[in-house]
Figure 1 (cartoon, rainbow, N blue to C red):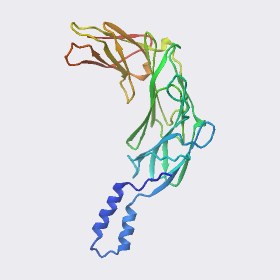
Figure 2: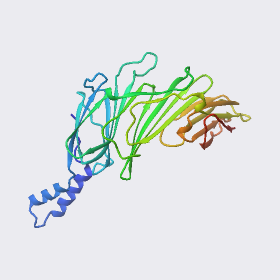
Figure 3: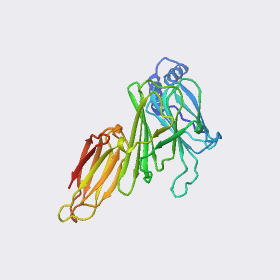
Figure 4: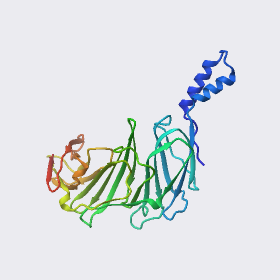
Length: 319
């Protein structure tokens, strides 16, 4: 069972008060009581983890992050192999996220047969509290390009929570598309929860960058998006070869907004890299590393904030 002690800064504050009281007429008992009164009130948070069949599981990674109160900015990762873990934390609001895995290998995929990400954007700790993270509450994230021959490369989901002027972020990197997600707990304030999911797929002739953004009072429970070709915008990157240079160029593409993972690929020059992207993700940034002459420094160029529109083609040329 994992526990967390009173934050160190509170202990130091109590010690400073004790030093101040030395030599005063106040009794030792009064001084101790006064110092204890300055420590933040703490409560027990117990977290139970259940797998997809409702059994306790120790295959999880849970983080509790402070948003407001004395525990603001603190982050703990309680864990116990039994599936139930307890931590003591100061009174306040917290963000809880738990990533549960099955641990079963997926043939030919080099990963697992999926994971469940449960997010509680609002955890108001004002009493001893028990939370149950249940993988059975999750629903699939099913975001796929129109070309069924496309292979999944990687993805990332981010949850951003705002409260009282403070912003906290949690995210998960994905090596397979087999993710299930769920909201846990009460609603947060309207518009205080923002989530985005970016997934990258590839074919022999083009890459897909599918990004979707959601804002509300709850985390996502499942996500389904199957954009058609007409729903996507085309971004083309044309790379030229300078005299005396050899080797391929490198092209990086990613959304302009928010932390995310991008897409990087080699480009034989002269040549063109083609991407199909989702306009709803906003603008896109391109970084181009052109081939250089032997011994010459790298040659880097950027094109940021590229606006796109469904059904249209945007082209950027680099040398």
